[in-house]
Length: 394
Image (cartoon, rainbow, N blue to C red):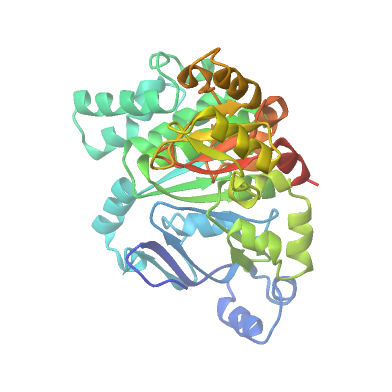
């Protein structure tokens, strides 16, 4: 496990048992008994069994598993909605189990917020009042909390709906309100227990994108619970698969897909959409034909001929992407029919290395040219062809 200042949350040997005979249950588990044997002999339910993991600041950590795997119990232990039977939970290096009432209240109000599957909104309050509720409980003055609430409402795409009653909102909009309420407190950690599972597929995709956008803007640490492998791989920087209260494998989506630890994990992953696992950086290529704006048409045509292509990517002195020069337009420039600056096609599709392949399908199908891969400063990093996108899904 990593050991550095970027670790905001650490779970150590966490176990949660329900029932009276916990001590003999632990003894049975130490000797190798599974949760079914413990339940049958002692009547003790083993919800979580010796779970350990670390969550890096600003990352999305996903726990995935079938119903009864223990994932929701784990997340409820992280804010002590359920108290662990054994083990420890560290927030910024300090055990939350050692918190007194005042410290625990501070932790829950300022450091961690939770978003539930059932939304958990108050029907007698409008959107603005729901979003501002946590700040109201904290004692923030009305003008200040409403200003903060309006900022977050705008961020989640609900501007103009502040005065609407919760009953008038769709499921996706209600979940946006739930996320906004959690974010309004400006927590260090956002706990999300299957927040999108009740939504229809299209709304669910929108909410996944919204979460990634918000997380990128605010750099929040997220612990996300799901039973959907596609959702886990789309959202997670790190993914942990749970079964019978234990973590079976924990890794990045790419590494887990390439190296499943056992048949259970392999079967889980085989049901996944590969486009949700692999990103552009796995399929992009170095452009074979690049030119600078100062290069002439003759040079451009020679590059295209030598590389057997019909277009060249035009870049600046620091490899910043400017556009594409096609074979036909290069010939027009050489013939004096148009200047080079007018010949360059500047309105071209671009993407980033981290874009999921699934998110490129629609645009790749209709793209005239390979999609340019650029960084945040618009430097050309590579290209992705339509064929590369389609073949990666096979």
